[in-house]
Length: 162
Image (cartoon, rainbow, N blue to C red):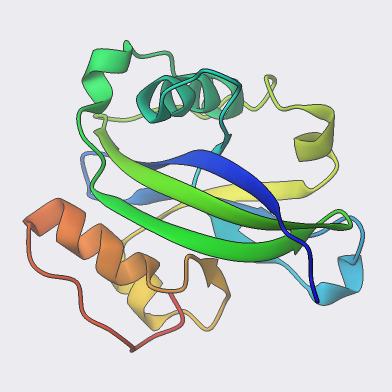
């Protein structure tokens, strides 16, 4: 039986004026042969931190974009995921916040040591690119989550990998 470490996390759908979503590409340093995948900025909450506080802190650390917590509003998506990273199994409750910017030059100098050792790139993705890519993206329904966040339309199940 797998024993999971419980974790709460805040994730950010950072979208530019062209409705492109920022994603990082990374891998599991304990299993680099497992391939690479794309994921949103964000991460685990510090003790006593709210989801919005964590989203603001993580966005600043990972992208250099510093915004007041009030700019994050209410989460646009919430789910629970289970995964292994660096030899630890997690059961993570996560909430996603939509943040719009005209443009942003990503600055990763605030990455933690673990991020520097497991993130090897980033790029801005259009919704169409997410729908049509064969690359792994997390969460798997990211395209539907983004569409719902941008348009207010209900999420659809299944479909493309992202």
